Image (cartoon, rainbow, N blue to C red; front, side, top):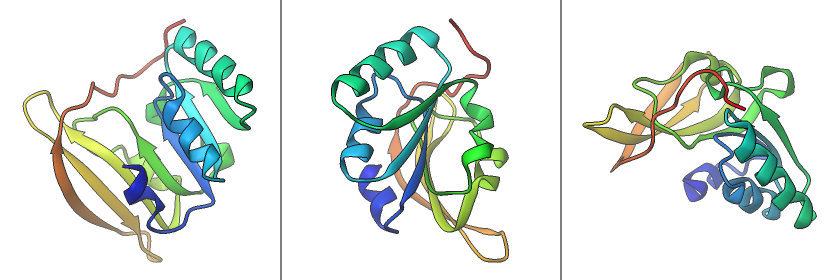
Length: 143
């Protein structure tokens, strides 16, 4: 997913699903401006601590990842680390022209890794990359 995301040389990236902070750390170490959203408060607190210990400047937010983080957009890249049944339109809206979104899409029976590239007219070019299995992208937050 990271390799695909880097194809367009993004500068500012939104990650949906911070988890342990590993993906955010990789992106930050590669020199990207990273924003990350996590719905589970305890996971985010642990990830923030790890990222601080590593000296990485990653902006993080405890919120529902399905709504993204519009106030810092648009983003050159968006990486989603949980599968939604369909692409989340609000995340596509937060993508910059020429930017790409990489996300697993589908239900528990069948998921595909998908890349979207946003065109100047606002439409998107969608490419299916590979079959995958991810946890579901859930709404809401937990402390």
